[in-house]
Amino acid sequence: MTDPGHRVGGGPRPGASEDLGNEVEGYLLWRARIAEAEQRAREFTGRMDWLTTGQRDEVERHYVDDGLRRARQDLERIAARCASLRDEYERRYRMLRARCVGWAVAVCGGVAFVATAVTAVSLSR
Image 1 (cartoon, helix red, strand yellow):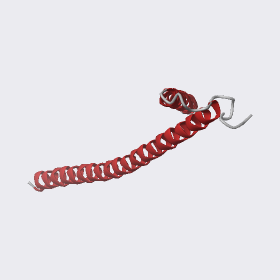
Image 2 (cartoon, rainbow, N blue to C red):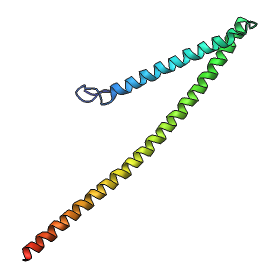
Image 3 (cartoon, helix red, strand yellow):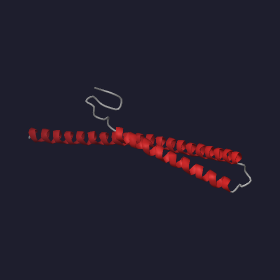
């Protein structure tokens, strides 16, 4: 039987627990960011004792929205940088791997050539 997130036979798909762990961690970090923004907004409006309750709520809401918008932009910028670094490292790894395979083939070919030459010389004597 197959279903989303599971392989045939009911076993979890590879990396499923890692994906879930990353999602939970991201959710918790974002909730912490929201709580921090709300706390900062309360501290910011706390110094403005002339505000009415409605005004205080509106200023806090705008302060939180602005802080979360900036945090989201920061996270998107970091995620984009991480993706570009990953692409760069993968490209470099592929080049290095191709170079290593090329050298290995060249060395093996050279050893085979030398072995064949030595065998041919020793058989011709």
